[in-house]
Length: 196
Image (spheres, rainbow, N blue to C red):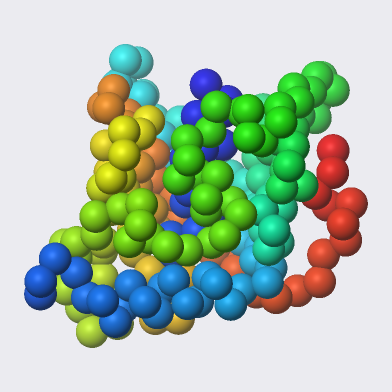
């Protein structure tokens, strides 16, 4: 369960007519390829079909080229997901409990690992289509080309081609929505940030 949440958020950090506009997709990919570091706060709302309830959580994330990632959830369950590009740590900051995985053996799908290490190549992993045309902002539906833990993603990028909103639709009927704000790009991070 915890790894599934990490997969969803990890994929979310990097998404940032014919079937789709090649020009806009190229700009999205180029934006993320040229990004050295990125941080943002987020609000996550997950509708769980089984319980018919919506769970709301806040957090913040930090990314550095090379697959380095830190996701910190706030609130009652202050779980941190930390990766130095080789190892994934899932840390419960209240209990001190920590799980450690070699990233390549963590069970993450290939597309999540690819986005963690390279940031881009949406067209390699997804079939993309624009669902709501607009001048500079559109909602994109991304359907994974390989079997995945989710059916599809709906992504909204801002006019600088960074991801602003994301909805993840799972096979079970659950839906997770993320809103990103207070984004900062290319700030210098301490290497300690990506260690537990």
